[in-house]
Length: 105
Image (cartoon, rainbow, N blue to C red; front, side):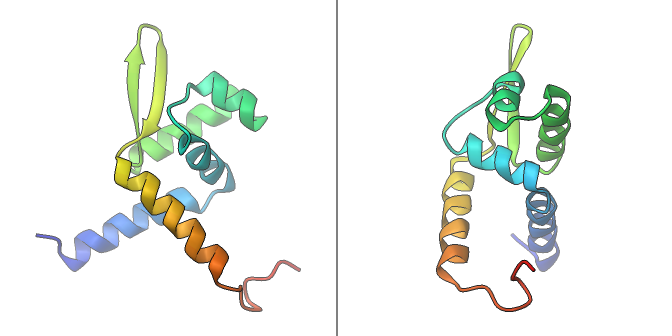
């Protein structure tokens, strides 16, 4: 049974993951399918070390999982529901006009 505390903890983990623009970019890239750190780094124009650190955080938040393939590690979203949830969240945010507190100055 989900308690308020469990839901709060889950939303806190998601919020922590989404609070960083680089982690958001990684998650959005993984919406298209699994990726490898070097591949993600090249695609996003980041260092491999930076991407690996963010992937570690996303793993800690429970949003991505790692599958070891020999010496390489493939990352993907932890659950198919997450892909739908992130896509829906983006759609909702884009459908709502930001208020004055959200506008970039």
